[in-house]
Length: 303
Image 1 (tube, rainbow, N blue to C red):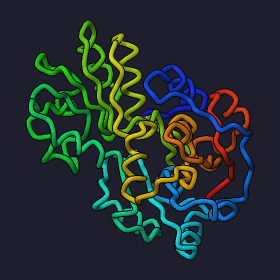
Image 2: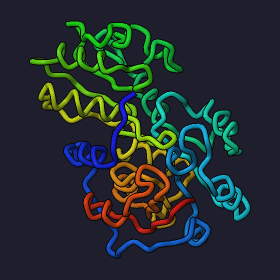
Image 3: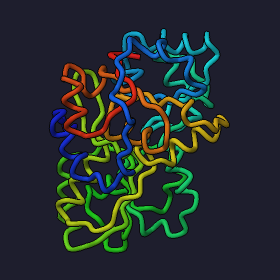
Image 4: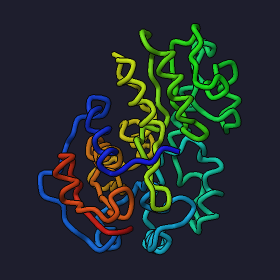
């Protein structure tokens, strides 16, 4: 497990802004609110990040369960849009129920769902090296691909595409072997979870986006990665399409990370709410916004 500071997290994101949609900020300064209840009547659909918004690790964040109950009471549509690459929507509902949330499968969309849609189109699996534990929910779609965790990170000669799926079980030694074996070679780069880091308890731990960035920098990769999760617009667009909402001004994206949730939500045309209970917990949020030059429509301490 690699731990990150908020400053390092932001630095890595900022180095790779060309991987993400162009920054598109609201015209006005963000408005501070008490919670989503203050603005809920303005929206027909609420998209919610998971880690740092609903929970930190396995524990729900204070007020999150109550906020979901309020949305149900007011009959508001919502969908959890998560960069989780260990859980697809068909079983995600059970995981959230264990944390006190009464979600149905339809109310969750993960970057694993988006990645699986790509994997179903693969015709030359032997050319793809995958960073994911050997026991993974998508094993049936990963069949024939090179499992780099099982190779201790060493990239075989036939691999020309790398899929950074999940950092679970990935070690510093594997990462070192990956970069050493990838030096002087160029690859097509895919990432299921573009997050650089995610809150887990009181820590920020590295996620696949971090290992991708480290690899790309150390081996001087030329191609831009293909993103299956936030801030890529496709995952937002898929959720919005499924709920049939056509007026994007009536869609709110709620997240805790400027470079994924807020940047992506702004880019697709939604309104955005930044919570300070996630990766920026305890920090001056105005300073974080100024540093990133990415701004939400609203700010709240918790959902």
